[in-house]
Image (cartoon, rainbow, N blue to C red; front, side, top):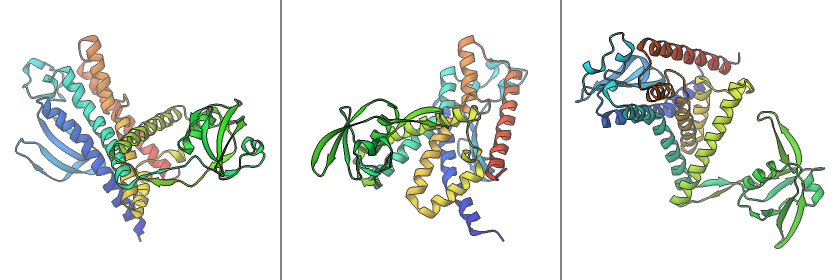
Length: 356
């Protein structure tokens, strides 16, 4: 008997991923139409069509069987892979007749749509629901650590470190991590009294990043929900989107150097499980997950792998530098290689999801 959790995960998977794929392809679609390129089909998913319709511009809009991506098929985009490649014989509304800038724009618009969508979702959450912030207040002080030895106690509020104003606990963490074995002057508020304490962070080796970081032996107080007007919500939306991007890049570096634990790599099944859990927790959790995945989807598609948008950008960059495109046979080989690589990667991460 199939458990209800399976259906929750499946429904969550479709609710979370379908809009992200749709907006990605919509970015390609609008850029193509703006560039005068005809779009033959717009598909959410791969494989056989489940259902769809044809609009007045003769574009086929459809949902396909395998919901692990999507595509916009533009008129004439595959002609470059044939032996008889004569651009002068192509109709004006074909992809290859578009100038190089337009082709760059068409390919780049998909990932940009995901990055913008992620930013808008995060900003909307912060504006309508508020944002959780850890106040610059010490919760627990660990024994035998520098903070304890210097006289820090639970409930102390950190006003500044080395004359740098502290707004939240993350500010404390960032400064301390960057200063192992360096003396730091803490301005402390305790019982309405302000005083100063010198603390020297000890060295802590972080295995994942292979960095030596500073630690003083304190934990953060519980987070507080603060309300934000539109401009602060947008500001924090931009900052948190950038932080997600940096974390993604760090994860990519760890993955490429084989330093990441396979338990930290999510495939379709892992995403489905998280989507199901978010569905159980409510709308806020779903929207935040969509924002994270949208930013990740945009960044992944910018990787210079054939069959991804970044692969096409790489081909167009070659054309820009050498004033001519790669031969159709080479492009076709790279495209097949890219698809094979992505399918292999999908199988690998799915195996990780299953515990192999």
